[in-house]
Image (cartoon, rainbow, N blue to C red):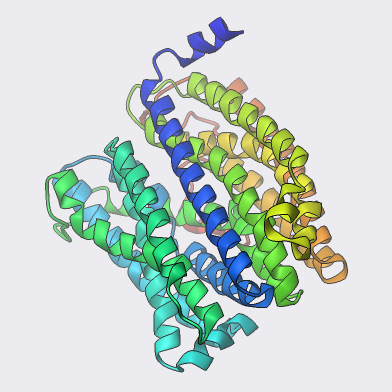
Length: 449
């Protein structure tokens, strides 16, 4: 078995290195995040933690909505160091900043969940401005990670994650007593947002050229179309990750929300690992001469194996949550097994979805992401109001199983119709969808809920 795995791994050093680096990054983020909220739970009331996590969840949700597909488009069209790459990346940062500001303001004044009152109670002007600042900075942090990944500067990706993790704790230790829940939110979010702005400014030291905004390269239209298509698919396949906590916080009180967020943080690590492997697969599989089929097989084996091991470990050690956080957080231990078990089918879905993106199989992308969103969030909207966090856990598991089945089906159809070929070789005649499909047609075929 080990010999077969080594044979599959041969020739894919960059894919494995990138995957390992991103798994380490995910571990740093998850461990530091869990420790941060553990210390917060030990030193502050469950209600304050619940309000702070609701605000933090709101920022992540807005960043997700305002992404515009830019991280995926940067990985595909701005991976090098030419002038064109710098121009495309410069416009990606501008688009991210504008979209984050507009969507953040819309969330504040149109959606306006109860958690936002914490900001308004502090200052009616500075509070909303603070949220917009956090949204834009966090959005930029996602872009700079992708840019560093395409430069194969994996060490810098890890270093940024470590810096963010370390800076949170001195902020948490500051003796701020007034608006305590707001300060917990600031301590959790500020380092990430600042790193987005700072590393964006320092990127020319890595790429060898300053940020540019012209002249526009010939690939601009293709990148815009690609980002639009993948924004739709990203809204679909990541919607459960970011929308589920919002559904929960709108249907439970602050104390229960605090418990759910503890469990959801652990699930975030499990869910990020296959996503990180998929990001590395996208960066490597999109290069000329890439052996996509063998890369996909390797990614499925690695991601699936890690998720099975993680599920067993999390289920066996679930009562450790109560030991660490206290009896008030028993609900987190109860919902952890089904939530983490969902990472196993998610590993299958994530890898095959990345394969569809590399090969420009828009039909497969739409089928997978639509199934994922509708099945998980549809069930959550029904179950959470009635069953609370238990309903959220079972909706998440059931929807992921259904999506994995669809993902495997589209992969099976695709591999029977295509030979292994470089991603730039173009869609094979008769492809399921393909980049030849116009962005507005794809969006019309994939209504988002």
